Length: 126
Figure 1 (cartoon, one colour):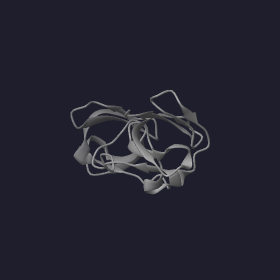
Figure 2 (spheres, rainbow, N blue to C red; figure 1 turned 135 degrees about the vertical axis):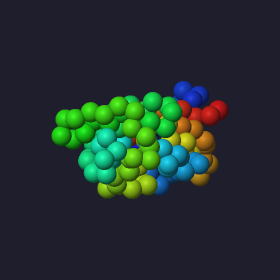
Figure 3 (cartoon, rainbow, N blue to C red; figure 1 turned 90 degrees about the vertical axis):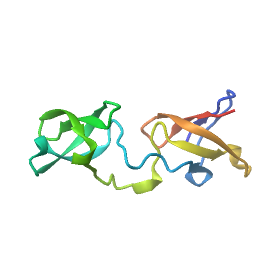
């Protein structure tokens, strides 16, 4: 992972074992881009799609894999699909700690950018 610290320092190719999540995130909510199944129109049949927008009020817009779209779907009608990587991946907004330069001292921060190639920018709290 590539890390951009708040104080301007940068570190490249940090091993995953040197980064850890804080607070466990918000596992009962969804984020834009999450792969999900949603009960289309609340009729009891679930279809695969992605969260296209978080409305901030426990409702989400869904872009279904078949091209359909649905707005303001209640989170009780949505279930998350496993992305295959489970809890080992990081997402923008995750609170984490990273071991700066692998020296054994972890500093708190937040994933500020997922570069899409298993590298991340981190905004540190200091």
